[in-house]
Image (cartoon, rainbow over all chains, first blue to last red; front, side, top):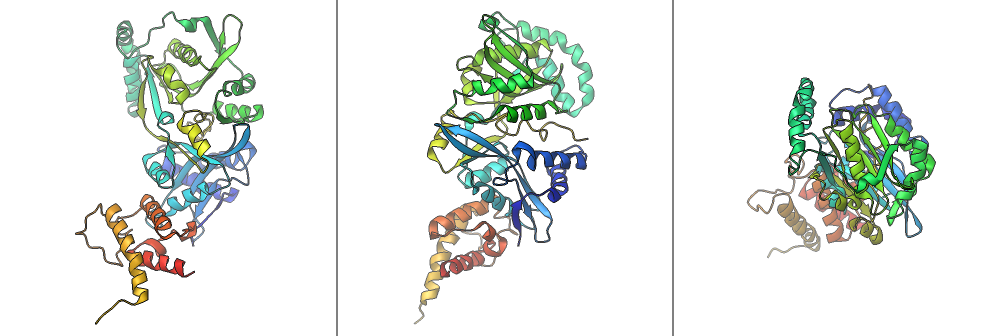
Length: 367
Length: 93
């Protein structure tokens, strides 16, 4: 009889191999990946024996599936809530056991947690979640894209398939300059005088960011209860990714008194699409933080920024020439109606650091 | 005169709604397709992990049963006959 049980260190080589086969197009060094998975799922702040990651094991003892879980303590109405952040979900050999994925998902959702959510569910996994009363959250499920240099953006996208395309990027600058002069065009970016000029932004240390982040979360009815140690751990992990370019972590402050009003974290290099992990702000300062971030990316000659939507940011994103597309879904499952309402009304803080976007599983090479 | 025994009637009480569910959800309402009791739903690409969760949800709601995760296996749910036998067995216990 197939079995679902908590992951052990002995399972990790097989899980790394599954990850390589099912989720990565390029090669990874399996020992390095397995070692990282050990630190991520079996050690440190992400290991909770009561809320473990799970493996699906065939009759012959071989691992055929894995569900990576990150325990997260959250706060709602003064009460502590236990969340399972559902990360890597993979099952193979559906021919010999086509129901393995269904059993694995049901097993995880039946755990002791108050709520479960995933932020990167593909269409197949989303169909499974829907069948077990998972609720897709449209406002959390969109990818946003702000093009700063349209010609360079096209070249960067082409370079994903044909690396030599990046060589023509310098030749495209006149076209980008032309797009920037046509202010009516929804593409292109021109730094203009705005309220954001009353604020400045500067690099911030992980220690300082870890102290600041909780102050930006108080506006959310349901929010992570991170301590500084946990945040420092996640920020240090996020620093090590190799595939998405330099990590940029900056705080936005009022010029008048130096008070912090927001923070952003993204990856990217000149000529390459930047990936935003997190935008945080005080209520009402979302647009300011977005403007400072776009200005910073523009100053580094980046062609575009992309990220994941959060309801608190959507209003500020209107009018800033940002495009939206659905690529994967954020889904929540809970037996508590008040928690579901916090999500559907956009008063819950998830995605990015409250997800799996900070882990090296997304965006590191393991080569 | 032929008649149904009590057991046959109980089995029909299970088979009829399950068959209707399969036709509606996995055959998209196409009554013309054959659905023999022993036809494998997996081998005929009628059900996958997503479909099985739909079927399990239906069984739990329609028959008031709790389907355990370990019971979601082809041996219990891969054909109309197996599904009926599984539900009948659960009811007996």
